[in-house]
Image (tube, rainbow, N blue to C red; front, side):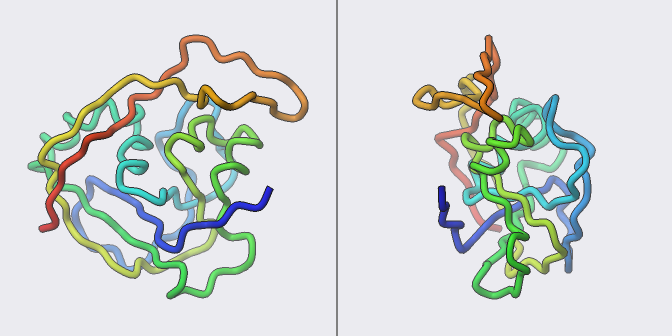
Length: 168
């Protein structure tokens, strides 16, 4: 299965300072069972995907925004502007298939496995958003990992949608 990787990928942080370069690391906060060996920079092809992929699946977004006056830092990575080694961007279907990120198909999470400079960075103010419970595994997907059928019971993420934001 060949997947086209979007040209722009995003990373969001509650730390509002500029950052000149990102280095792969093991995140301090991961979903239960998420890979704890591969160093990476977690990114998504949308800001909504980044917000949903935040610790606690975005369910702590309100608390985070209260601490930052509703501001978040967005880092853009334009893959046309950087020279990445082949295979250094791992797409969502690989993350999911290998069991490294169970919600990768919902958040469209990608991993960048080498150091990279953001092509752009800016603050956004999150004005409004809605949270909703959503199954981790897309309903239309028959889930098979390593030829084993997996059953997920009452496993949800807290997704973010209907978001309104403003660039600062």
